[in-house]
Length: 153
Picture (cartoon, rainbow, N blue to C red):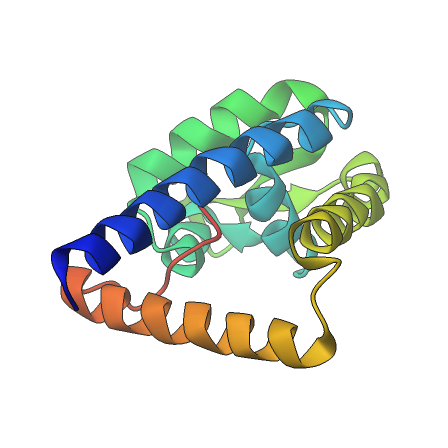
């Protein structure tokens, strides 16, 4: 790849990343969320029995202290509760409340609207090529940084 094409790729990916994050922030603000909180709450909502902070961190590909900070920022919404694990009182299980579960369809709707806005005019073939290319690029970059799990963030 020559320098001109490399510059174009870098510029397009950087610009898309910034624009997508800004658009996502706007959509999520209507739900009372910030980017990243949507993924965290959605993942938690997939486990009715809840999960420990360590399990959540592993699922998100982040360190447990980072997950704890994220949960602390999200806690004011009443979207989850903390329960001690009966077999290990040092462990805390995070369980999504009814209010949190009611927010999930809004999160999924915001994701669908953003995806449609980003690629809505592309043909099905163009969408498939774009998605395949982006997924392959993500896989290569994940290999470079050594992450096995990478959230939407």
